[in-house]
Image (tube, rainbow, N blue to C red; front, top):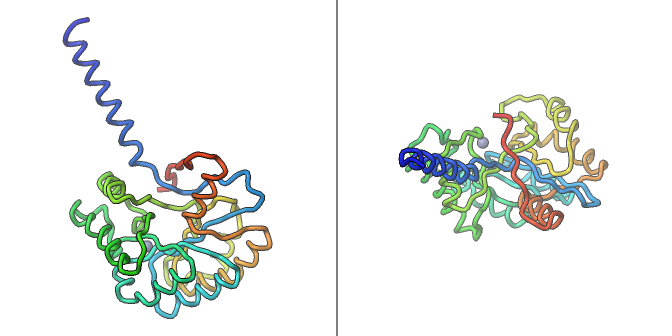
Length: 241
Ligand SMILES: [Zn+2]
């Protein structure tokens, strides 16, 4: 084989290996396969808290239905309302990292992205926890963000169902309609800590329970999948951005 051809083939191999390595960094958890269980499970997730006067109401409602959830909190708000985050942890819910100040990470330098991720971890360390899940603000991510998450042992989590409840004055009926259709076991549902979401959940939680659903944290959902399949869960690619 000619030397130039050998060099060319070697370069192709290097590129293929490099690409297959980076594919891991592109994976985002949107839902979990939990087939094989007699019960049905969904993971409720609440972004952008803690919110004074609102988060405690979420906790009371969830307790009524023995529901555990994942709260993707904002670091700055946790610093301001650490007493509320302590209540969330004490009630058995999971805290996920939703960045320090909810900036669009894609518009920041790598150093700034690193700070957004690590400052959160540092803040909640004093509360005795080390989150393993990360949800990007506005679900915006880049290769450098994905690499930083790997470096910091954080799993990027999106969702399979969106409540579309982030804006002010969203009709409760619209949220109920959106979340009562097409829910299946293994879904991760993205919601926000808003009053209208709370009101919608008062209708949805008994409805879901009637349909046999149990409410678990994202980490519990992943663990259920591991038990079922006897191996690591499979990531699903994010398909709605
Ligand atoms: Zn958010």
